[in-house]
Length: 113
Image (cartoon, rainbow, N blue to C red; front, side, top):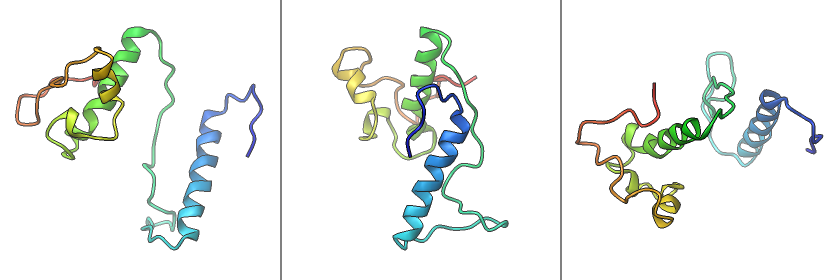
């Protein structure tokens, strides 16, 4: 799939990417649960488009992404999630390795309203 350079239809673009990916997963015989309407339950059903407004907004979104594995109980500390850009931020000296503490401490907002 090739998109024109002036394409700003982010919803349509993501719909196409998700559709192609889902069809490929199903074609490879991976089991994917279906919802009550027969659609595949591989993706979160909703999303919202957001344009980053400034550096503070960007920082809040990065914090949110970095903290998500802790929030959802996948790891006790942000540093324990190996698939995160957090490690790049630590290497660059932008965040300490113990940023956000651990799951058993009182959580902060970390980019959430």
